[in-house]
Amino acid sequence: MVVTVALACFAAAAACALVRLVIGPTLADRVAALDVALISLMCAIATGAAARRSVVELDLLVVIAAVAFTATIAASRFIEHERGDRSDREATR
Amino acid sequence: MSAPASVAILAGAVLSALAGVGLLRLRTPFGRLHAAGKASPAAFLLVASGAAIETGWAGAARLLAAAGGLLLTVPVGVHLLFRAVHRVGATEQLSRDDLSRKDHNQ
Image (cartoon, rainbow over all chains, first blue to last red):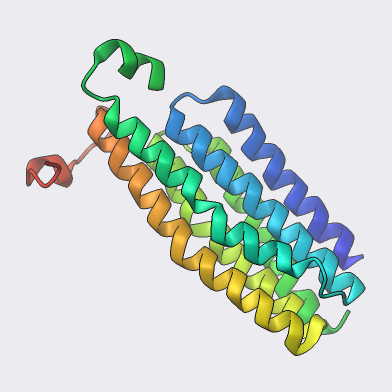
């Protein structure tokens, strides 16, 4: 029961993030939406591990936490780099 | 599942759902990044503490590594996004902009 409610909340958060990923309007919004969706997935994996008292899938969480931020940093560098050229700036909004 | 673990996981689930709602409903890019960058690592911290109660020491070590990494990296990444959005010039919706006024954005 607890697991079902928690997984429904994580799914709702990921659905909100995916809607924000589609509607934008800026590139930073889409990157943040991907972050929230990924963290919701991490929460769901942790909840599943707690429900089954299993340790196997927790290694996955360590790897995701170690790697996930590189995409955010790369995207923020990209947004800053493109600010000089107006046509490219419109493309990144 | 034990009662403290259930409470922690449910609290994390509610906070995660609130992060999603904030990301969807807030009007400015700064507000949306605020909702995404602070609520979701806190939600994972709550869920990880609940799961650590259930999975014992071996699981707690892995969850501590994941939660520590997330708490270190997500605020930094979102801060860089904040700065990029500010530099690109999405400041017209702000009622007050101290970062531009003090000229710290060079």
